[in-house]
Image (cartoon, rainbow, N blue to C red; front, side, top):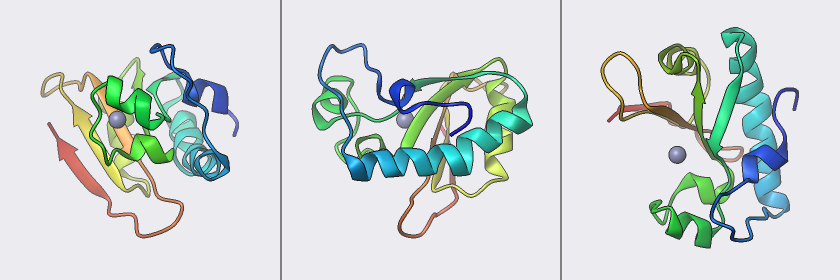
Length: 128
Ligand SMILES: [Zn+2]
């Protein structure tokens, strides 16, 4: 964990308790070490995590799907100075799901990426 902290991966504006358990922290750590830190080095610019771990209650309030990988600590939403570049860097790495979220054909509004510590990573790319 070089560029990211568990604290910034668990913050929420909902005011609701959002504390990951040991399993979820292990998943978040895996995600940072295998994806985020590496992407940050290649991108060479700061990345902001707009949503990381979500407790089930937080996830429900923000309108996330019930099966969201955010509730497992396996997914993050990211923005930076060039979201398309970040998307393309992540695309070359090992991940479970990578989503070009909204925006337009040039830039996504944000990037969703997930990785599984246990199980098969599907390398599924979705452009919404
Ligand atoms: Zn997401």
